[in-house]
Image (cartoon, rainbow, N blue to C red; front, side, top):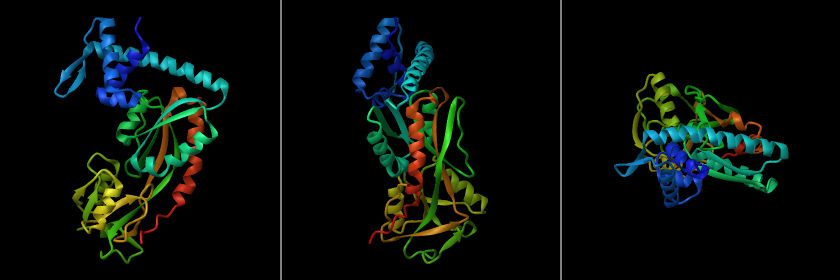
Length: 308
């Protein structure tokens, strides 16, 4: 009989793309995951992983086992959901992923609140960008995801995944203190031609929004510096190296050399909670989504002050 934990390890490697990433998601060491898969290979008398460069790839037989593992894990998940639903209280492990600024600006308060009110609930947070996390929740690698989209780039929700709106996050233009826009209350998108931009890399939602919006206003953006994290973008603006469009959530106080200017019309990104349809009755999901929505107004109302 195939061991479910070993199948879970193989499924995690398939979803996360490597033994190391699978181990981090499962809370094991890479060695423990490798041992589980080695035992599964002995049980099935089949090669499941093959070396490819510095990583591994799944064999055709492994992909067949992964499909079976997905079905079995879904059955186990339904059983766990029914038991938790009958108890009527949030309990058990809940794996959550959130993009960086939500993980920094929203989730700490939410998770602390849940821990205080529901001690039987074991939440586990990972910082993962929406372009990866939404697919992972659909495949069963995560229980709940906090993601976002922009007005011109709606979030694509896979089949079998439900969503609820958490709230809207305003974004503002950040410029160096000596910039011509620094004394303005607002700037229109049509005025942004010729600026040197500091932005997130291609493929990120913020980058795609900037490119499409400025091109729609008749400008080809000149992106001179790229960084994944918003604090890095702010630091580059503070050094006078360009301007940037940065959401307010999780941004923190601005350095003295940075000025915030409203963009007209104001860009807004919408935050969502997403989970698989099969676990929608789970009290842990319902309570976490409710708590995210309950905390959002206070988080959104916070106005980061400039550092002195």
